[in-house]
Image 1 (cartoon, rainbow, N blue to C red):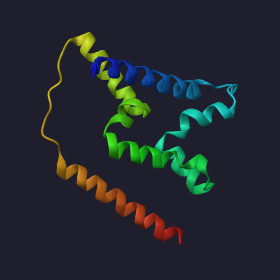
Image 2: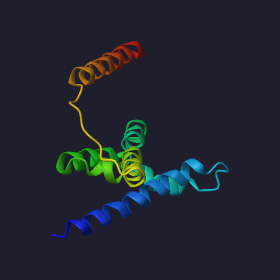
Image 3: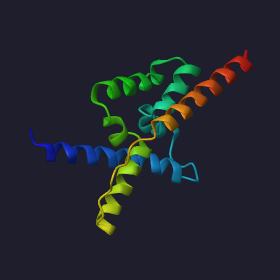
Image 4: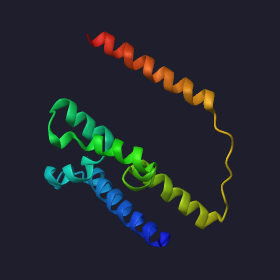
Length: 132
């Protein structure tokens, strides 16, 4: 299988998503119809999850697709559909081209990650209890 072809397809899909979502943020006159905003936001995790919780229709099932896509293919969502992942890949690409420096990786801060995760979960449960 030609991996360069797959990379080009991923880059084209990423450009479509980042440009369409950026267009929604840049539109200060609200001239873009709301029907257009549904298409790029359908596959974004948080907007589709909130849509599913509030409305409970098929329009909000994008988050299930995102979870399934991530479980099956790993980082495909982050590098192709998620605007922050695309922006991170773009900044990394530009930095390598401008500075011609390769990045080095350090050992992950596992304790810090689990601490932030546990604080987030704890605050979520406290918020849920206070809403009841």
